[in-house]
Structures are given as structure tokens and as C-alpha cells.
View (cartoon, one colour):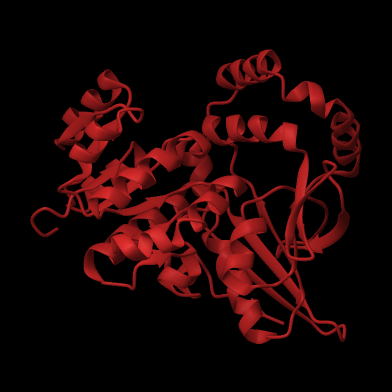
Length: 346
């Protein structure tokens, strides 16, 4: 790294960066945890309060890139983007939250004026699916419908599980007629071959509902995840309780249960868990194009994808503005990550 090209990382990303000889500055809200991690890796570290914008701007003033790994991003992305706009620091994160993507894209003009790049979602959410969406648009330029999905054997992390809990109050979401609309949980179902055999799948409120539109302009977008029919039926019944699921006491209880029961996969589980990503574009004439790619597990894709994005911004000078991963790093960037195969187009 060149002088003053400092970058923030956390935990596994910090470990991966240090192993490759990088010297990121570690930062976070928990002084003890950040200090222990920084000392164990021999990396500089500091803590700051996201609610103190003046202090935050002082912290970022001599940094070129920040990689935000702290969710929920509905709470952390906005103050960090504000500070990046004020200091000329590029912003990256690993969110998969639809609203966080929409809010970040709304800062397009601000980013251009501040001469910075804003690119959220440089992890498993949403690099693989975003690359597939962009490639399908290239293959079928007049597509007006896009379906995306993935079958990942990786267990949920506590952070992802808590984000899912927060999203329960919104139900399902799809893009229809150029707008993001709320729909019941498990709204649509279909049988899909993600690349490892045909499975029953249902719609989920994934980040591509926002980002795939930014990348392709396709008006109708749905994202699917494999789910047994019996589980899908239970999820549809749960949708009736959606008003209760958004109440603060219920949210607090569900997040408490997540913290107690979900620890995330260990290194052995990650190594053996592959991910299968799929997409289908269709035009008004009924022509369809399908794309598939097999990747490493979601954790490793996130680490490698985030490091790719950081290194890109440290070495290149893209035009300022808001980007999706495929627009910043190229539609083939997922194929360049360790553990990924080649994208297959039908």
C-alpha cells in the first residue's frame, strides 16, 4: 500500500488483509474488541462514534477508502457516507439491505461533486447476482423481466440473521413496473435448477431488487431462494403476523434468540459449502436466457470481493459517483474471485 492509503476492515477481512501484507487501520465501536484484534494482527486501530459527525470527519480526513462491515447498514451507512462526502473518502460496504442500496444511490450527484465513489454491496450480497444480472442484460438487451437466485449451503451469520429479523416487518419485496413493491412473504414460487439440481424456490426480499435495476434498468425483478414447500407454507402463514413482527419488543426478543442460537459456520464448514447462483432474463417476445455460476461459500466471496473492491479503488481512478459491483469492477469480477467457476450462459 502507498503512504496514506489507509483502509478500515474488521475481523476476517482484517485477517485476510494482514495475511497479504496490507496495513489497514481497524475501526469500530467496541474498544476492547478492536484493540484485541489490532494487537493480535499488529495493525493500527481506533474507535469512534458514528453519531459524532465532526469526530468522524476528522477520523476519515486522511483516508482514501473506508469499507463498512458494521450492520445493520440502515443505521451505519448514512453517517459514514456523509463523512465520506465531506472528506473525499471512497465508500464501500457489504450490505444486502434494499433500502440501504436505494439511499446510497440517491447520493449519486453528491458523490460526483465530492469526487468519490460510493459502492455498497461488495460481498456475496450482491456481487454474484449483480454480475449475472449485468451479463444477462448484455445477452438479451430488450429483456423486461429478470429473475435471480442462489442456493448457498453456508449457515447464516448472526449479523445476517438479525438483518433478516429486521426485514420481517416489510414482508416480501419485488420490483414491478419500475417500482419496489411490498408483497407477502414467499409471494411467488417456482422450481429452479440453480446448478445443482432442480429445487422448489420462493421469492425473498434480496438487495438485487434495487441493485439489479441500477445495473440493468429491467423493470420487473424477483429474487428466489430454495425452500421446501412445507417451509414456504409456514412462512406464508407467518406473513399474517407481520404487524406484530415489527413491534420493538418482538424485534428485541427475536434478535436475542438469534444471538443465543446462531454462531455462523466454522472454517471447515465454510470450505465445504459451495454456492450456486442463477439468473433468467426474458423479453416481451418470450425469449429467455439463463446464466449460472458456482462460487465459494458466501463468507469467502465476501472477503475476496471486498478486498478486490478496496484494491481497485487504491489503484484506479474511476469516475466519481454511485456504482453497483458489476459497474465498478466489471461483469466478470465474480469469475475472478478464488473458488469461482466460469459463468455459463444458455
